Length: 68
Image (cartoon, rainbow, N blue to C red; front, top):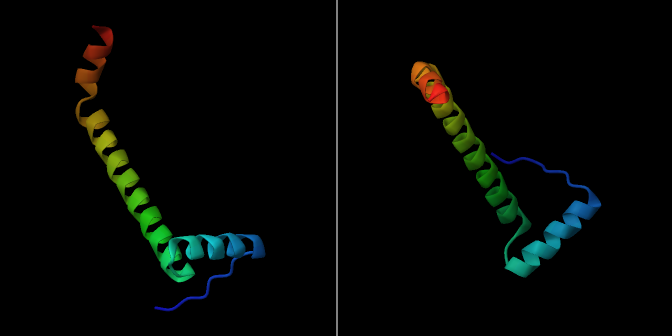
């Protein structure tokens, strides 16, 4: 699906320079950045869920270790 992305002049200029440096398009760089952000946020959610699982299922063990 197509979308319009509005960047400020300074950000657009920075992106233009980076695209030229990397011999890529601005669009490709934006897609790459969005995918990295989504991957990072999904991984953070997985880690948070794992931590919550450990804290809830091993609460007694963690209390005993804390007192050891």
